Length: 485
Image (tube, rainbow, N blue to C red; front, side, top):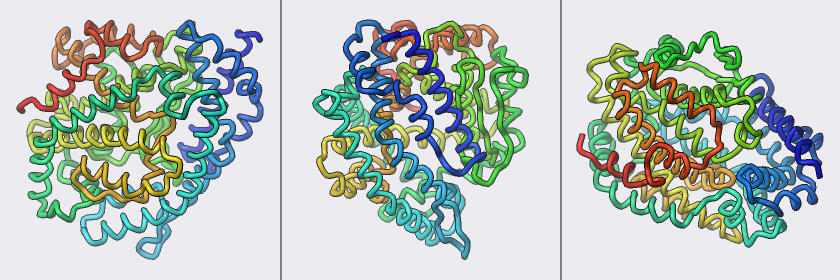
């Protein structure tokens, strides 16, 4: 089999798939149509192609290609049900205020609803709609398990660990430690936030958190009209002219079906990278656009002559680490003053720090739950287990109906958790060499571009070594989470 030809077609396939994802998420088309793309490139995931690539995983690029082929075959086998679920999610609506609210917009409506009774009712109705697709999600999950075994792996977890170079058990142990060591601080901060809003924690749900996290009282700090200029100014400080990057395209047009959250679509790396934005204002919108800009600049600066495996594939903990780095600027007191002109930010920073801890605890709990889910022969009984596991970590009531919707393929939650560690290590290095205002340093920009140019050639552990650490040191993350303000 010709490896060069395989890699060339693989790049065409990924580009077409990402372009379809962009058009669907940008609201340019309603239906998600991956099936035709998989059919056109079916040879990439033919059993003999997959077996051939699985045989030799001696080099990093060969291992990454084997991971691509194996998971691509699984995705190919699941493409029809995946398309069906995606399309039905896009079409799903929640009946609210005598109107049909798009299901994908319901989360925004919940976060914007000041009346607690109405908020809970909208959360319940949204969960009911979520549950309608759970039989299909369950079918998809079960089929993915059987497909992993069909490739010769003991189970789906073994496939993810061996091909993705993940030690999920070790990561889970670290995350359980994180949950233990941050519990008191999280509980105190959560109680303070809910107490100030006169919402009893004993009856609080994730809908209440969504509303409080939205931080309406801080909207003046994060106006809608400043969102794109703030991003442009930030990148300019690093020596990146966002408005004149020919390979990075901003999509800011308003469309009814457009995703409410910003996202990045690297259609051709590094030649065509889309940063899709639907400005709303508020700190979460700023956090989202900066997060996705971290992805976009990473892909836009990746070396064009790098191997396909390192430009498009590899350990996504790396690109998520860059995304977290920029998103965390919304927790940087100096950035808030320099870029947004905000001086009185104590109340907001308390909320932002709590939101960060909430997300880390949520993903730590998700990892343990998903390991249990992926071992289950029948996922149906785990809806209550999901609600309990996340509820215990978050100290809030969690809709059990989300037990299958709130799951990404291939333990992507582990990539996020590893990325949080990478981000702390990278930010510490930047602050040590360029100061807390590293975002305004052209030298810091040069350093980041040197890292971005590597694409995802290195896994998170290797990146940590390049940053001067002995490996992924969870203690660095824990120290930050438990440090006194």
